[in-house]
Image (cartoon, rainbow, N blue to C red; front, side, top):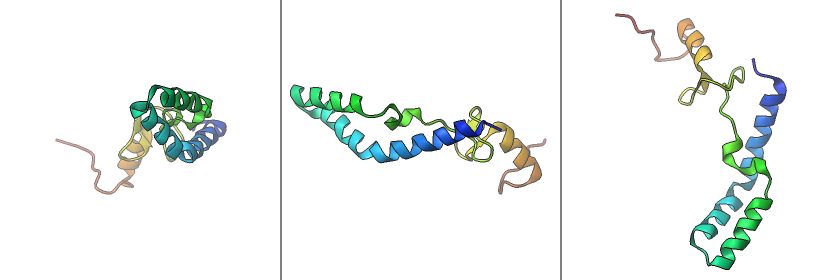
Length: 99
């Protein structure tokens, strides 16, 4: 189980990313296509935004216990939790391979 504070911080980052996503996309488009003066202004505004506004700051965590490593995106679980739930038959369509 991950620390509650780390899980809470990650959730807070997700909300900040959502709040700034549209404006960040606009600024990045200006940086990509604008005139040199517009680019400079967009870069300055982008750098003034909070660090946590960047989507790369969000960490993929296990949806059950918050484990940060070994995350399986398709299931939203860590490898450890995935294995436990698969053995108990809690994941529909997942069977243990045997041959």
